[in-house]
Length: 154
Image 1: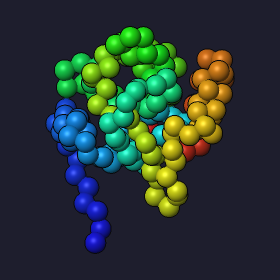
Image 2: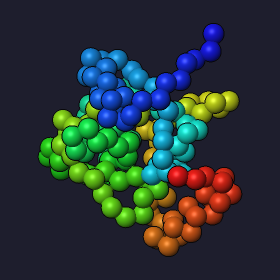
Image 3: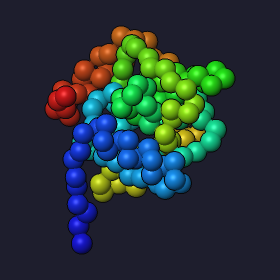
Image 4: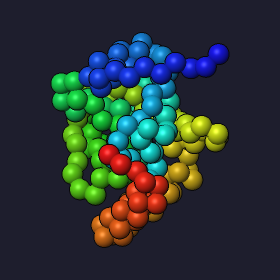
């Protein structure tokens, strides 16, 4: 039996995902977009989400940053009840939300034909810290080359 894929508008689907996570369920969603390159590629990778506490720096989370507006980005700081997020593939710009707006945390990155990757593992956190430490220009050119080689389009 093959899995059925359904495409829904983000506000509808991710609102339902948020409810399922609040009830204690795990949810797998296919990713879209380029904001988490090079760690998560949209339309290729899926993520397993769970409601975890506490939310920590380095976690990849699904958060509602405005009414019906969700992002799957990495936590770059937590100060009290305030969370700052940024996509790994976003060179500039940040999103802000409260801890209550974090719907779930990515516990596995899934790609067909490969073993699941735990983004919270020590190895993956080292990779992320190394990536984040590169100067803006290095990340910018790396992402441009990566997209051309992979022929990724928005």
